[in-house]
Image (cartoon, rainbow, N blue to C red):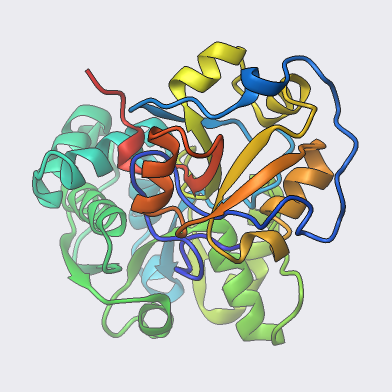
Length: 337
């Protein structure tokens, strides 16, 4: 499942976002052999709690959707100070900070412009930036995180001497052609794996599996020649990622002492977990089938909810499901209290 192509997962909620699965064994893979068998029964039953945490995808089941600057090639060639300024953002941005930025806008109701300006002031040495000049329009899609990142890019470019502004340009079907042409926007905060598969599909037609993987550098290596063919260049990916992820409550994680999906499989090898999410999960290789095949997880049941939205969040918090598919940068993951 691609995140951020807005194909399956919207930005998030209280826990993480995204997909779910079908009834036990509904992926068609059957129950995989569990990798361990520590806790069982009630110990692995859902545990209610307000705070949600993401379990590390330590086997890289999900593709690497790290935030990466996309730039019109002609614009980058004409403005050598542009990419280094954007790379300064990538060097400083983490997933934890992206969660906090999203929370500041979605939960605290602060403006994206103010939140972005504060982050740049605290995290980027703007005095050290190479200087450029001329107008640059940074595009942003119509969701909170993209708007924040577009303003972060524009603020850093402004500090680097450019006359930078932000323009909301809608979804990828609208903004990608505009970025390639360079006529309306010249810069965009992209997501590595999603844009890699999207550009590959534009160049080579639809395929069952695109070139993106769970490895950042491997995906970036695949992206760059495809991007050059399209008239785009990409800067360095940040550590910050907005990708499909699996969340549990903090109380559930603490009770079992788990922080990764492999540890969850070791602790709950008896198939007592309840998975929640949208209807696509049982057929999606990066949802239930992937959890079963890559990690050896087994599930006792499934709750059909939404794609990482309020229903999935509420089901986790109310102790109705053990594990829910969300988005890794959801502002609802911000620590409370």
